[in-house]
Amino acid sequence: DLDGVTYLDDYGVLVLVELRKKLALRGAALTVGPASAPARAMLDLFRLDEARAIPLEAAAARTPGAIERLGAATLSQAGDLRHMISFTGSVCLALLAIARRPRCLRVRDTVQFMQKTGVDALPIVMLISFLLGLIMAFMSAVQLRQFGANVYVASLVGLSMCRELGPIMTAIIVSGRSGSAFAAEIGTMKIAEEVDALETMGFEPVRFLAAPRLIAAVAVVPFLVLFSDVCAMAGGLIVGVGMLDLTAASYIDQTLKTLTLFDVFIGFWKSAVFALLIAWVGCFRGFQVSGGASSVGRATTSAVVSSIFLIIVSDAVFAVILRYWR
Image (cartoon, rainbow, N blue to C red; front, side, top):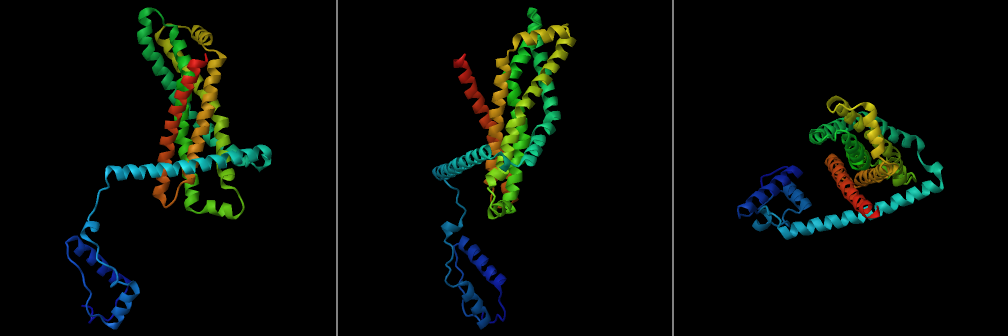
């Protein structure tokens, strides 16, 4: 009964709506009786009388079934695949335009991204690779020294780092540092509508934002891998000299005998592919951002997880190809 109400605003109507919802959960209904002229005007404005009470079945929280969740996940993945194909085409067109007209590439930004992706990552790559080589040499020395095969520690560390562990570990580090940064930067620009502003001003967002990051990552990550290999061999050298009574000259000589240029170039080219995947996924997830700050966090996490997954899958493909190639 709102007959005695002299003033009713939108908050008052919201109170009535919430009361109707709570009563619906208990199987009851809310009916608005007589109302004063101000109250009736506000009720007619929000059409409260026309809105029906929420049925008890609809009001109760319902957990979606397994088939419903599977269908939602399938539709979501299909949408991601569509956006992925579209973004891949845009990237290819942007790189083709840069190849035709190199002056349209933002050289200053590309160099800046090269510094962030490569030079700034040197300390963490050096530390992790050095410790990884140290651990590998230590664990293998425990077994190999029993058979008098101490010198083969150098072969194990050098070969495993150049062909497999060096590219993978460096790519994972770059994914956590730069891939997430690419997604967060572009995602923040997407939320702030800076990407829309670029389109309004006539700039191609993919060429303007994604192409410099892709080129910078592909240019510097292979050299990061070479640096990682050297640091890992230095860690193995310390174990060989300190624990296995090897000389530095014999350790280096055994490493050079084991490694070939093919082994070094395999790691070099694998790391270039990994860098392309990392930058591509980071930029793609950044352009997918919509909503608020939580969407940026989800995009950043998804960029890192997707990059690591693609790195492992592509490395497995390389392993199969090399197995049947040689």
